[in-house]
Length: 248
Image (tube, rainbow, N blue to C red):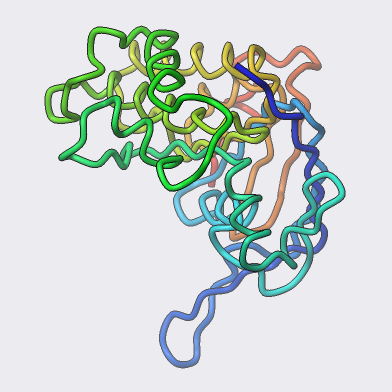
């Protein structure tokens, strides 16, 4: 399987606001300036409403910034339109808390679905089967999502995210619906995939134990960065929890 070059991200003054009623706006991201090196494994932490999901959506170009720029390598993604925007999105893999699988499709067809409209340099079914096999789901390829456990559904979602060999993987609360044992399993899987496929990986989470598995923790509050910790400097899970406080 071919690999994409890891993405180096630069956010400069990124701001995104949403209206709540006629005269009230909330900054989901406020003047966020960050550099995320290629191949990094980063946690975005903070309470619900802190701006984690919005920041992922802006980086993935699912939402447009109101101000500021986001660069992936040499490309300013905030200026992309049309085909160029679609091409960028194909370099990004998304994993969501609720899996977002299509209920009428088998696991195999769910994995293929994102690339179905495109010409590829590989056989789509073969790639999808390869990914499902690598994730321990070879015998579940023909199963519908309703016949899969939560952990199995999340593995299918991860396989789908990897289908286009992304350089950047964005995971929004990927363990939020899972029991602790399955959550640990999925985290180990993501960490291993990041190394194997040489991706930049950003995980949004409210759980400091999830953050502790990453190399860097960026803590948000009200759309602002309030803490930025290199977890390779000897932080243990307990240290991360103390540093994160109540993640509020």
